[in-house]
Image 1 (spheres, helix red, strand yellow):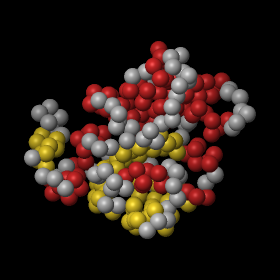
Image 2 (cartoon, helix red, strand yellow; image 1 turned 120 degrees about the vertical axis):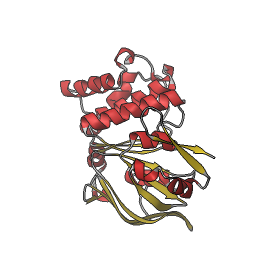
Image 3 (cartoon, rainbow, N blue to C red; image 1 turned 90 degrees about the horizontal axis):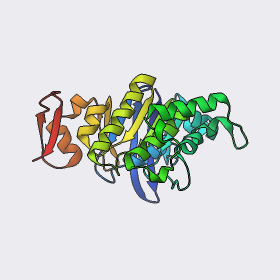
Length: 256
């Protein structure tokens, strides 16, 4: 398992954000967290990415308590992209991707031929080789997200954790980004953990779907298991119907 959570909860003062839950996230799989706004998805991601500490319980990273990992050890295992990445004014694509090598180099470390290889390979994998000398701020939203994914790839971690990576993208760019991430997951054996809002996109690209409701674990299973009207209605609280995609046969949900 990449992550295991043992009776983990999170509170802010007297408010329970995440009720006690236990679950496992498999290595090499594409796992997506779903649920309405405020259900605890981003909180859970921040616990997995070591941005927050649980109020109670233990988060394990490959059987080791996550709090016992040093920042360097953690960064060499897990790469994290927040929902709102920092501003990148005056930084080129290549310079941004080079930041992914920081956990291996340290503050004063010099880039070796191997580092440059990982950086160039990451840029190539996300299809930005012809843009590597452009400023990130001049890219489209979809291209910018690809640049951030390249930085995560250059980090050479076993797992990438992404908090709503498609939230600022149109439908076409959402599809292209998720298609890319799924391809990297399959080709590299990369573990992917992400938060998405679009159930149809999540169902299409994910191995495992985990749904939360009001800070509680409501569902964990395959796309096929989740794409049932009773399950979807319990997650989102609205009447939903399903139909089969005319080409792929994949279930598609819609609001009644």
